[in-house]
Length: 233
View (spheres, rainbow, N blue to C red):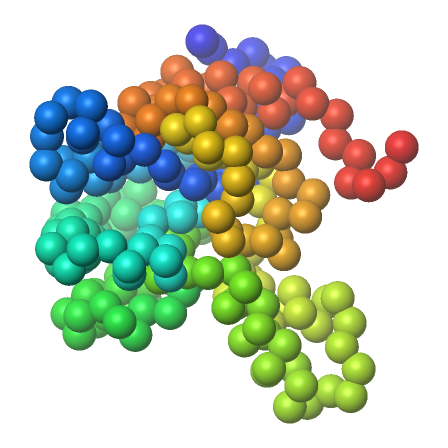
């Protein structure tokens, strides 16, 4: 499917992804679980490339939730190794294409090496603006909102909506216009609950490792066909 010129003019500025189905994809193919996550990381790269082509400015990927720490130690270690590999292998690509890398979430539980690489990656690409790429790592929206309120409480007697917005981890980027969730589940799983109050939601049964460019384009076309009212008539 190819987007028309009219459609391109109406594309979302910010697309967020709940990447679900890596484990199911691996099990379906009788592969180790980590192979599903590896394939999933390749899909991220394809989405980034297509988004640059379409001039979509912001992408946020729900990569690791606070609840994911409850998985087996073996899987968590392999996921950390995969994250480290992704950071190493994509650094040159992000620099070449002038992509701004950022992360949100509580990274305190990750290894010292990963924390160092995340901060280095963020710092070295902070001046780029072709695309703003955010990974949600050890992220939970309820924790984020609680932390924001705690920050505000130290300084203000009354708390207003904008006070919370400006104290969230995402205060430097616009709220998502479109949220895409794969694998057939129809829930938000504690992801950007404040920020997606008026986002368009798109659910697909496709497992994340099978979410190719054609399916991404289909989701964007679906978004373009909708009329956003932001709570109005």
